[in-house]
Image (cartoon, rainbow, N blue to C red; front, side, top):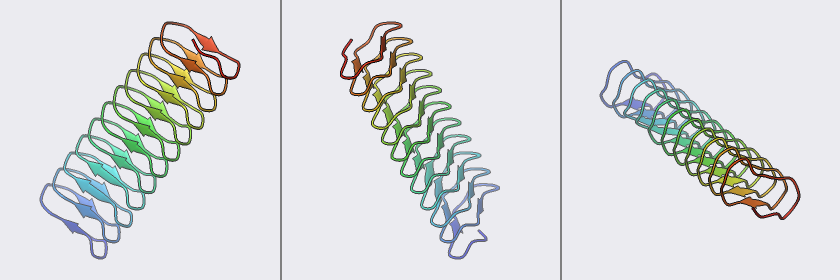
Length: 173
């Protein structure tokens, strides 16, 4: 623990170099920003101001006030973003979240993905509940599930199905 007021409680090969940073066990974890925290796991990095990683392997919380709660190779890079678990998920938009799944990306501000595989919530206030390879690319769009659906029109919804597209405003499929 090299940062002022930083501490490491157990583990192996951990580095707490940020001011008031903390690592509670684990292996090869790095907390290098002010008030950054890691609790367990291996090869995790908490590099955002007041960011945290709670367990898992190879997770990164780089956005200010971001958090990653387990899983493997997840990234919380947006300010106030969170990833709750899963594998290779990214919450890069401000206030974005990914609850789990695999290879999901919430890049729009206030966007969210509950789960599934290879889903993308790209626009402001867009959300995807699940499914595979769905894209919410319009303002305030929602996709419930299914596969290869794209919601482009603002305020549009795709409940499910396969290969559906909304390109106009306020559409429902």
